[in-house]
Length: 260
Image: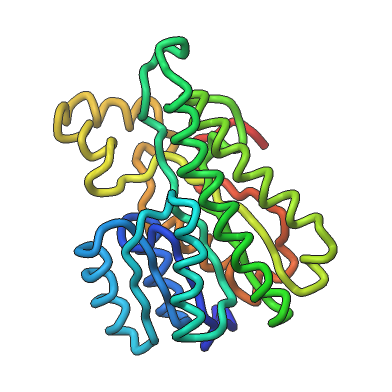
């Protein structure tokens, strides 16, 4: 399927590893020029080298994306190089394993850190790109949330932050001043995804037998998802083919979630 976004300019936050890296490579494969921003320069450099092989323009920016001024600084650098941005993928997030299992054992800082990393980072980047997209009369904003942004489960501070991201996309999708500029806002809600260097891989290494049993007994498909499988859905939502999909929160979880 031709996505119809060749020559567009895209930004993927947290684009150097995991789902963000897969999204960046998929968009570049569709002919998009891609900017990625993340904390670690070495991961950025590795991903940029992969993207460059696809013969598109690339930008890599190392920064702490949770800082309030970071989105403005990132967009300023993109503006100086490109002067345009059509696609934003809010991928930065995490914190599902942060804190203590018992709610009362967690300070305000845990709640606020998870909320800031997920929700406020998405808010700030979205706020920065909307004027660009209004002027262009075209835009795609996709936020990577979680199945816990659609239903109960998980640690409450993570669930709350992801639900807020989902709400943000839905509310913007209902704003006619945005939608009449041919801008769509959607969420993609992954389930358990195997990403190197994260909690799932650590569990597998620590107890392979228990890990295999968990997948067999608890996961609908009997396996974890992959970043590429999530990226495929994100890429579609960024495309011209998804022009009528707006305000959706699409689970990419192999049937794991229980909500409709």
